[in-house]
Structure formats: structure tokens, C-alpha cells
Image (cartoon, rainbow, N blue to C red):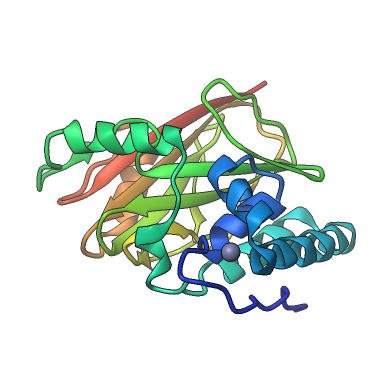
Length: 240
Ligand SMILES: [Zn+2]
């Protein structure tokens, strides 16, 4: 595997590497872009990443490129930077909403859309944040970031238009992935096949490991996915 460029020494106020990678992948992250324009270390890193990523895109299938980004993204960011991360107005609004919500109960719970998972879509050379109402196609590659106030275990399931259920992140996992507090890009990407119809992605997070086989069975049966202590977010997209 060709390694991504190493992260240059940066100050405590610099955003985590994963945020810089999102910018280099073409995502619109205004607060991070603003920082990059004023910080030479971060700008250099994004430029190198963009350059190397372009090389990856031409040399590798989409899913390998995404795995590469994910591998890089799971390298722990400097601990201090998290609290100092500049957040956009939209993030502040989302944060306020979360703070105003009642505490997540210990039983099964369903979160507000977008509060647990964000999905990046790679189509051709373009990487965008997947939004409600977006339409998917064969060949689209998706990667999943989960966000949590505490460490835990997470996993994403897919149910395709034929009702076939696959654990997509981490791919074919028999146990959920351990995630630290904060935002984590899960291992592996889902690359969509030609099956048409509704594509449903179910993200499950729990403070302790949960039984993957039983959530797979629930989804196969078309039932709501629940497990003790889990929070679940369902994202559904058309794939005509
Ligand atoms: Zn910086």
C-alpha cells in the first residue's frame, strides 16, 4: 500500500487530520477551509493529500482509495485539538439541538437524523456528503463516519432493494468496531452493485459490544433494529 503523506507538525488549534482529508477529498467544510487558508502546515498537508489522492484515484479502484483515507483517518489526532476545533454555525446549531434533547435513555433509542452518522459519497472523482433525497447509482462508494459523546462500538448494515442484508462497515464484520469519543470514520466502504430499489443503511452504536447476528436478523425480517443500550439511525435512499 502506498502511504498517504505524513502529517506535518501543527499547532494545538489545528483541526484533526480527518477534517483536512475531508477538505482534500472535495467536501465543503467551511470552518476547516478557513483555517487551512491561514495555516501553512495544514495547507501544505491538504495540497500534498490532494495531489496524492488524485494519483490514487487514477491508479486504484474507488473502494481502495476510500479505505486508504479511512485507514489514515483512524490514526488518532492530537488529543488537545478536539476541544479547540473551530465549528461552523451549522455545527453549533446541531450541537444546541443535541443539548436541548433529553438524555439518551439506556434502552433502545432512535436518534434524530444525522446526529449519529454522516455518509460520504464517492462517485467518479467527486466526493460529497450524502443528503436526504439523494439518489444512488451502481458503482457509488459510500463511507460512514459516526459521532458520539463517548467511546463505544459501531457498525453499519445495508438492506438493498431485494431485501439482502450485508454488514458494510466494517465489511462482513462479526463484531462492531470499537470507536473512541468524537468522530470516527468506520473501516471499509460500501460499493453499490446493480440491484435497484430502496437502499437502507442502518447505523448502530452502543457503549458495549452487541450481537451482530441478531441485528442482521432483525433487518432481514424487515423489523426495526434494536438492541440493549443501542442507538440506531436509519438512512434510506432511492436507487432507481
Ligand atoms: Zn493548522
